[in-house]
Image 1 (cartoon, rainbow, N blue to C red):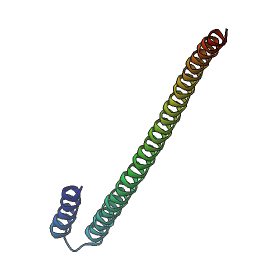
Image 2 (cartoon, rainbow, N blue to C red):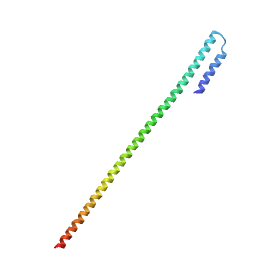
Image 3 (cartoon, one colour):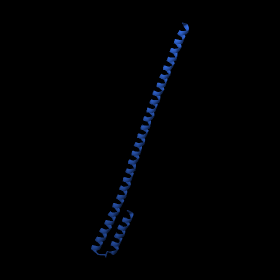
Image 4 (tube, rainbow, N blue to C red):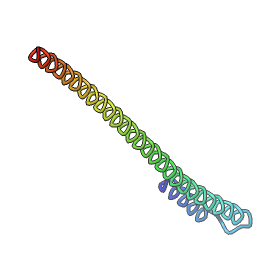
Length: 118
């Protein structure tokens, strides 16, 4: 982008130096200088817009990355919750099985005690 600006300015300088001091030449030189100025303004505007577009793209990428991290955290929390629920269910099942086994042992002990009384 800077090279184009220098080329435009060099062309304007060459146009000015090549012109004779006539009214037509002075008018053409002024037009060339004006065109060089407009080219410089356009280059500056393009550079500014490019920087703004890059900043907007960076902001969008950061927002997407943040959303992805948030989604991953939510998924991890849900998986941990499901794992905890599964562990609680397994513990409850084990406790029920232990209670059932204890009841059977108690029943056998009662039967044995009744037989001893007879």
